[in-house]
Image (cartoon, rainbow, N blue to C red):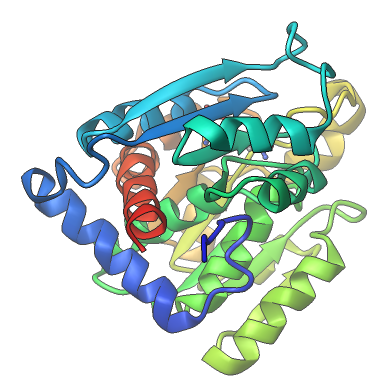
Length: 303
Ligand code: CP
Ligand code: NVA
């Protein structure tokens, strides 16, 4: 039976660790995996802009011997022409997998239901699973493990927060989520992560107090306004500014590294100087998007 990757919430800790190990192996032995997608094609459909996801999938698929077709549906002529289920069923007539970045998670559920090939979530309103896996690959490389570490996410409770919570719970990484009041992570998704954490022994803390991040190994920032959120920056800036990830916060918390999924907004959610510092893992995360996704593709297209 085909397997989709919509969120990781239905994965086991063992399978997730095996996937992380596969990403490490593929990164270290690219030649060995250069033909795993030979003769295979992937349709990649984007309802929202992308730099990292689009390019890392395209080049990554090429490195595995496969071929990607990019479909731009950002307000273009493809949008709204037919039902989601029909789009996906048609794509599955030619493609061996569908990668999709969409506004609504329910679109991915429609695709997964209608397509006879794996559907991979390239970001939606609720999750960003490829980002989550790449980020724990990066932590694994930085610390030699993910178990027993603590990641403190600081900012808006969003799709990236949710995937960090779920993948972190699966890989044994404790989580602190610090948000301004009213911008907490989705309680239903926190409950999904808590259920996994109860089995893996992971501690999840949520707070509006930035001091909750003291003692974390890594601080993680993301944009204060996600794609599709039309709130003017000026309307939330004062509320979020005390949650900026900067050098003083790194020192106060004792965190060794800083992470950010990018695109980053210098001197808003993170200082530009911290992005450029020795403590920054941002470019390693970007590079690891490709290796993590290649592990996902290898797993879903060869099983
Ligand atoms: N981190 C990430 O998904 O970047 P893009 O939006 O550029 O793909
Ligand atoms: N939370 C951000 C992540 C971008 C990669 C967004 O959805 O815009």
